[in-house]
Image 1: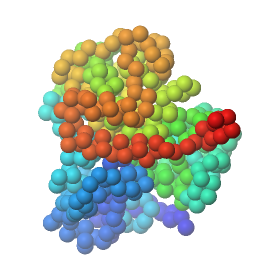
Image 2: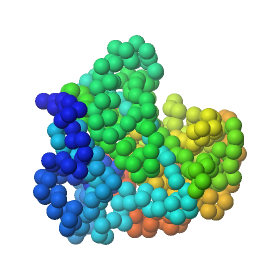
Image 3: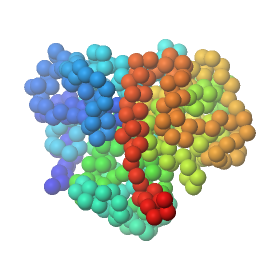
Length: 442
């Protein structure tokens, strides 16, 4: 049964809520939570709390990887993370994270450390995420009954940015926007995109940690919104061979101490710092791609027929390169990281983008020439091709001394362990396409 809340039912100040949904980030960029009373929460705020450290040794379907001991570790509340909980009256969400040994393997803390580096250098940052996703007229039970095959899409007549589809589904789109807003997730744009049941949202820009948190909560709210209506929202990078590849682009701008944007020198031009930021990201991307493309499925989007880039390239306004430099209008210059898919871990994707860019500035890394050709070609002269699967990307990450320095050896070790587990979990999986190709001919 759906819980439709009026504006008055939502806690006006989340800190004064009657109960709290206390969430912890998992290693894939999802949220795990406990619903607790105000009295219990107050004790955690005053004295600290604890949670089982298995959270960083669980995969997406709750299978354990890695070795014990599995034990409680201390956690702390992020006092800046309160937001209203949109599915229950007078309730709030709040983020906690480990403060003991597992703090080093938290993907949210990876981003926090990069923000701290930027702050020490005198930079302030604004960031935003843009997501595409598919909606199916299937519930949790029907998805499993159909084994995730032959699913019924929502809005079968939809075309990209289609006025008719937008109008026909205006009530649903407005209702989603209202629920997102009630969770303090503000959209700059929300509507239909390319293909059956495909939707797109651009989130409003804000400070970097808040932007990544907004992205995580956006996905959680959107999935719950459709599930409450007997439908399912899918953020897989490539849900099947005929579906569009789904993106999770990241926008980023940086200001110096005087408030001046450090990226744009004028229409079509980047400053020296902007070029070095791009240079750092593109230099590190081939060896650390796994940080922003962390699933097996993410690499199926980086294939012919999709707009996703497959090379370490940048362009002035182009839509098929790894980085799109947006220098006009001059009031809002920014860099757009177009590698991530909709399944991106927002904390880790933004953490890599920012950390690699700052490394580029510090080391004055010159970027290759901007391209006007398509960045999703398999190879371009003088441009590094990116790993084509997660296993190759993980091997490159293991060999990257720079990634270990920037993001922490302990984090890289745990992350690599989790990604190799993910590869092994799907190594023996046999697709319908493989069966149709080899069942009789082999």
